[in-house]
Image (cartoon, rainbow, N blue to C red; front, side, top):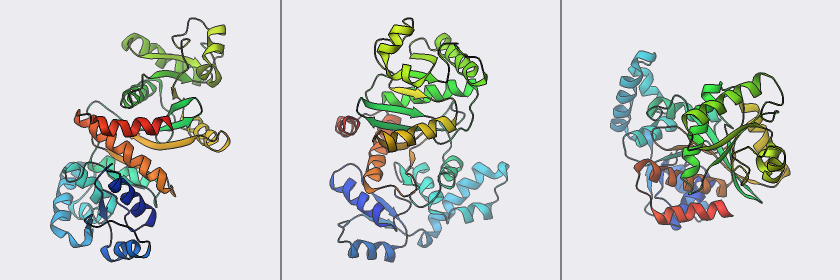
Length: 327
C-alpha cells in the first residue's frame, strides 16, 4: 500500500512495479487528485485499487478501536485514535496490521520520524526485538555493502549494538549473502582507549561468546574492514582476513549517517534504503524527495521482507533482488 499516492513519483513507481509484476499496488489518497495525475501524465494504472480514507468510516473506526485497545494504557484515547486514523500513514499501517496489505511504502513527502511513528504504534516490533533500526544497502564498485544503523538509534549502548548487529545479520541473509560483519570505531582491536572503542569491544565480546556462528569482528577502523589484505598484514588473527566485510556496524547514528551520505556523493555509490529492521510486519520508508527508481527499489525490498517474514521464499522475487544487488 502506498500511503502518499497523490504524488506523480509514487504513481509512476506503482505503474512500474505493477507492469514488472513486482507487487500489486494499493493507492491511498484523494481519488479525484490521483486520477488527475494519472491522466495528465498518461500513466497506466487501470484496475489498481484507490482508497480514499475519508470515505471509509467503518474501516477507519475498526482501525481506531484496535489502536485504542493497543495504546490505551499509553495515553491514547479513542477520540485520539480516531483522529490519528485520518493520517494515511496510520491508516496504511493498520491495513498491514490487519492483513489487508502485505507492506506499506511511505516517507516521500514527510520526515522520517512522522512516518516511522505510526508503524511503531500500530504494528510494533518483532517478538524479542526491543527497538528498530535502519540499514542502507550501498551499491559500490566492490559489490553491495550494508550500513547500520543509519537512521534510528542515536547513541546505542554495547548491548544495543549487539541487538543491532543481529538485526543486520538476519536481514543481510535475506539477500542470499553471507554476512561478514565489522563493528567500527577509530581504534583497531584495542589500539586506542575511549568510550566508543570500549563499547564496541564489549559488543564484539558478547557476539563472540553468545553467537560464535556469526562472522563478526572489531573494533576496527573502516579501511581495515574493507581491505582484507591490509587487515591480514596487520591483524592476521581477525576472523575477517579471508574476505572484506560486507556489513558495517557504526558506533552511533552520526557516523553511520555521515558515512553513507559521503559515499553516495563522493564515491558514486547508489544507496538503497533506508531498510527498516525489526518491525513485526513490513513497513519501509523512502527518503524525502526520493527518485522513482529509489521508490521502486524500496518496493522490491518490501517484497523480499514479506517473503522472509512469511518464510515462503519466492525464487522469482529473490532473483529480482539479487539483480538489484549486482547492479
